[in-house]
Image 1 (tube, rainbow, N blue to C red):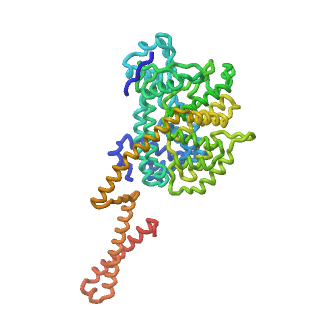
Image 2 (image 1 turned 60 degrees about the vertical axis):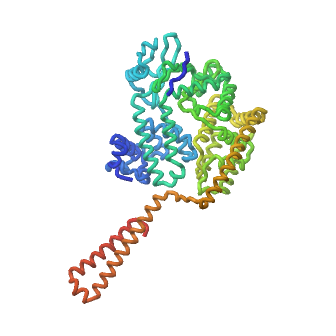
Image 3 (image 1 turned 135 degrees about the vertical axis):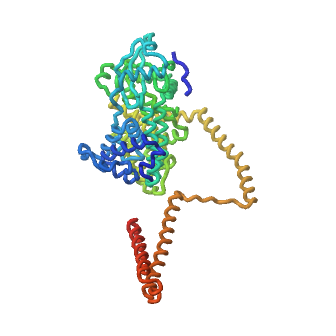
Length: 568
């Protein structure tokens, strides 16, 4: 029944022409939430406190005043709504940006909200598909089986008896998300303009990437395509099931897939009742997920227990392909090298991978980084007596990245997160599951496969193609350089980072110096007048006193402005 998918630094009032009045009202509402949960200092540091209503500015709710700061952040994001929840979930996957205690708290974000009315779900379905529910379904349960911030899922039965899951997007969520993303982009730009940390960590780039991911999650056609591609990748697997997509019933805001019965991997009672081989299932699931992230490059980026079901026949169904990711060969090779170095206790190899894949800031102290990594690798080295989870090792390494100002690409962090989450599920299935043994086996399998003739030939062919390109381009580049030299010599272009900001400061400094010269002239002239009887007689006493008063006033004004700037 499957078919091809369809193709598919001014006051707040001055922001109205740029964002629109509705956007500003929403920004004021969000700023109020942020302030109520104790983050007014962040708004002030970013120059966003102008969005606060004066009576509420800086007031923290009594119910949240005693909570830890990470907890208050989670609660604030939940109250902001779908975009806030998604921002928190995205940040929880970036332990290279936030301290460990914030990451742990953001991982608790619950994407579970009350369902919207069945009448609204019916209206949206009929609008999207151009037909009634009765025309397409023999049965349709009006009570959703799950409700999240972006959509909810109903169980239904087709006229041929097939059980399906109907995922329907919340009617107003797209407009709300677009409004919030516009505000997020504005806030990110303001943050980079005022905060060195935000500039070093490319907050604007992160906001753009997050916006792309969230818009992709709102496109159910793209989710259906991801589902089909994942199903093709695991067709030969005996432990993974991906539901079928019914394309004739799918649109950008409606997705209909095969309904799969099963239990959650953390439901001990149901797993015991099914009687599945949990050790084998955990081992096979780890192998499949590791193959996705190291060999195939297209992987499910959020394989947590809520997106999985254990079937009665001992297989696992992988659901919700809205959050997938792509990784190129180079990034996958670096991740494999990182795991290999960790397994061998090679701290130098770990440092090499982190510095190759990460963005190093001028504040990074490489000798200190090497010492810290050496201690971490020695502390978490696999041992027969003490077993550390892979998540603990990754958390420790990410803490070092924050300490030494190294930023990882989002895809690399997503790869590591997918592996850690998958192995966490394996531990839920089998408490005796050994993450290090599973990682060692997977790394050995991948490395041995790369020694096969066809893989070596492919690598050699890729290297030859790269060198051929450089050899072909070299004569032309040398010729261009010689021609430029004959035409007057090569020119060197220098760009000053954040030149506008520096020029603005220079302009202020020059204006202040000019004003000081004028003030000095007034004071000297006034002194000359007061000390000369002939000048006083010529100008008249009132005029001379006014001249002196003007000089004194401007001098005091200059002194006040300098003291107020805090740069005396």
